[in-house]
Image (tube, rainbow, N blue to C red; front, side, top):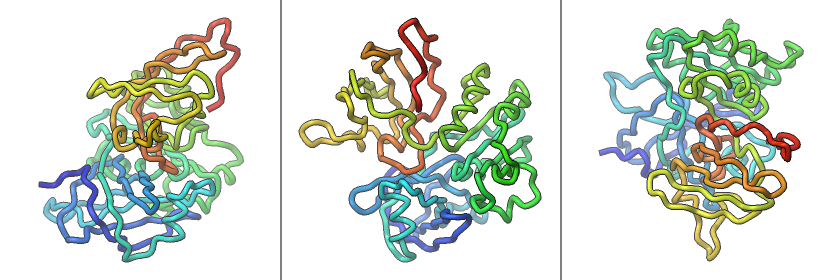
Length: 326
């Protein structure tokens, strides 16, 4: 029996550059055992030196012959200039032959394969899960459109496969940013929309899809979208067990608890509900709901905190002077 969440030793087979500062890392099972199948939008947990655990989206390859299990997993990793160790170590220290514990695959951004129409949007390295979704929809013959934005031509991953497609937008060539709002406005009313990429583009995506049904809007973002609370702290409830964890002011959910214990293993991949969030002037803010993503539980370089759209907060009152920067 294959257990998807149990880390298994895997050997790095190849490292293949696909764009500026971006490479594909292919891992194979050390014992040759069959690997759990993965779906579009899934990611792996890479257990790196110094107890780092980082999450990277899978690049799905063509199915194995006769429906067999995949022989390897491939992830795309961009070398982040502000890396806290994950992408930097992979690009500078990982060489073919090295063995790492690998967990997953797990999917917090599953693709709905029966949608009447699907709109795929990606920014930068966020193309990884979106690329896999595109290939899956093509294989199924389902209607979709894809829009992929990069700052420069050198940053475009999978450039050969995307050659000739009108879906690639290069900011430097176009002289402007991708018009996310126009794309979302033009999508059919019943379409499902998916996004993965940096926070500024996500802000535009959320604003443009605010009036659409929650279950038709799906996204991942890179890292936490707000700084640790400076006042008031917050509490979270684990949706499955009902357990409540208190996080002191100025600390993050993944930071060690007092007494040396850690929360990362307990929280990783769990659904959580934010019970209390600091509001303006130290007053309690509105409850928030979301899914704790790998970026907060495990400290990823380029993975997300919110996995599904949070419930909209109440409108600003007289004491709320402005929206906090993400």
